[in-house]
Length: 243
Image (cartoon, helix red, strand yellow):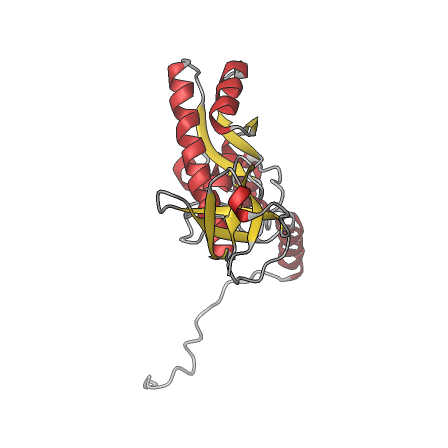
């Protein structure tokens, strides 16, 4: 049974006619197609009821293999992001831009992607954006981030042996000072108190508010508790013979 539908091929949104066979679909569903080169592609269903007879269709007719699973969409988006990042790095090198592209992120429809990058100075990336738009046919945004955001974006393992806090439970970066390390009695060795980002460890701020009050309580207890020196009592020492 032939059931012709029209789909939008990701990421460029080009419309194609497809044979959905007996697969039950709804508008907005994602599907896996097989093109003339036997390559699998992902598309989104736009129109289910195509009035034009199949023998009058002029465009290529691809066949729907199956519905696309969430894993298919994730894998396809990751491939697109890796390709966009590689292209950005190539263009940045060719344009002699002093920047470090770190990651690319597509939206769900792959109509727009964002390139996150590091740079020491301000960068004029207008020509880079223009070339990226030409090659991807999508909207492009370049976003400059700092060292802490870079660590959060790329992830890693901290000195404690656990994944970075900024990639897990931390939502905002708290201000961290060297004073916090001093109050906690931590050795002021840069290699010991700095994270992968090169900045002071975020965990130094976790208990910093407790230390002043704890030291105050300790001081009060020391004042109330008298300090006496112990003296040995040799008068009735067991095992010692009297004269």
